[in-house]
Length: 177
Image (cartoon, rainbow, N blue to C red):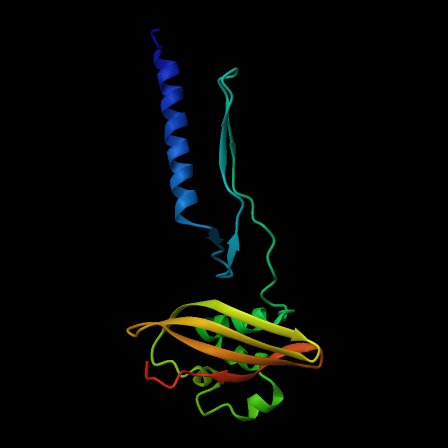
């Protein structure tokens, strides 16, 4: 069967768009919002081509609502993540995640010094979370990646003050980073 130039062109367009969508889906699970610097998760993008019609319908990515970064986190894990995010972008805002007792222990240099990181925090991931609701207490362990050093961890202990989860201890491994 001989294909016309128009049919070949449409087939090529479908292949190129499909390849582009596949590559973009593999490379990212989120979208960076330039104005705020926040990362939002997005739904997958898909291509629908109906053989009965020559039209191609492209379904684009739609942002999925996420927690408002200006609101205080509701759970213990969220508090730890917000604390580490503030370390990377807003160290002055870190103290709001600390208990009243912990704020008194903040060393000169600010709350970021409590983490005892020797270089830039490149990333982190929660590796375990244990939360007790009554009495409210939590232990959150986080793997941290610091520039120029081996991976390490930090263990956060949390309790509730005035109905909010707050950090009341940060355990740093004894071995040097």
